[in-house]
Length: 150
Image 1 (cartoon, rainbow, N blue to C red):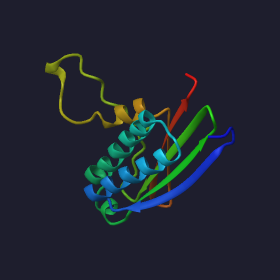
Image 2: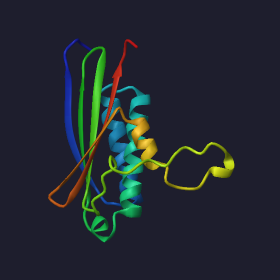
Image 3: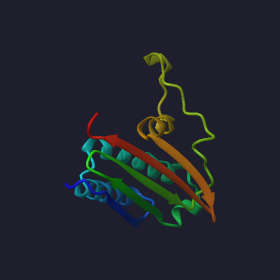
């Protein structure tokens, strides 16, 4: 790779279901690998993508199931560093992940309860998390950055 900056912007629309989630993950991995995004960074972003779509399916309500999930991938990198952002847009009930507190991590097995850790994972695995509700759609953006010299 040369010292020049590589830039990619691409979009995909998927159904808000398990098949759409599999398609979205494959699309993310393909684009990331084609543009030399480190596999660990792709995995981090894929975890955020999977949690986001799973939450849309489980909690988005009837309007979420009636409209496709739109994905927007924005990648830029140079020889030593990069940034990849994924915006997940859905027509479900408004839900700002920045306003909801992630469930605390259990201190022991007795305190552990199923569910509710997805928000924590999205916050921990992304370097930046942004949210906007516009035109009846949730737009959540996850950003992952890396430095090859580190």
